[in-house]
Length: 270
Image (cartoon, rainbow, N blue to C red; front, side, top):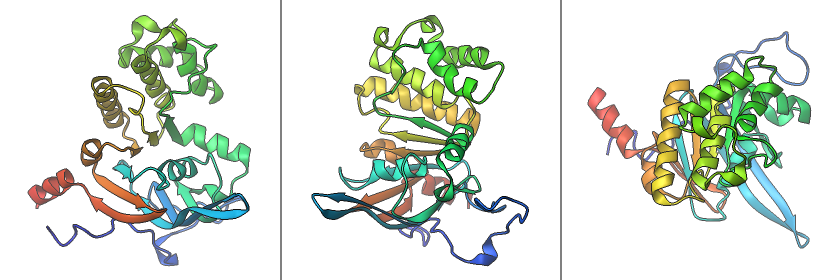
């Protein structure tokens, strides 16, 4: 194992010299010009249950560079999905900071966060979360219409063809199989060409064959769009196909390593 293996990868730095700031921005946040695509610093999440504080995430720090593919793994209850939801701005941490594409999202109000998420984050859920009263085409077009894209329906049509559902554009979710619903969800996640794609157990409700098709589709579109990909999974074979694996245990980072395949590539380049 090389000297870089087994070490934590990309731990967030607190050095003020590593970041430059634009002084002309609003008081809501400052924009660091040179930072990673995702930066998490001293992140803690606590909930109260039966009058007792329960720590879900405990002082996590790491950053993820542009276009990296990262798997987050760990046993059930280790905080994987909670972490992904916090990175997406779907919830607020108890303490700590999160930066997405140069913006500190932990200081944003709800509407500002929604605008930033629309422009920067695609999210794929385990349970699809399609709108049942909308067709496949309309589901994919939703984020495009919210962003003011005048060609939203045409873009949605092209995406559905790209994921192999050109013949199902007028079908409602109830008329689609689980794999087809997840294909629609993948197309929706990529609709606005987001720089960040987050996927929470995207194959968890699918059989192994369909799940592999979905992963192949996500990776192909990731390459085409050039996103930073962060994927939560229990599948260690899938995790090993990513460039980096972050393992959580009891709400802490147990390890943060480049994957075996990435080491092979790096060793070959040297």
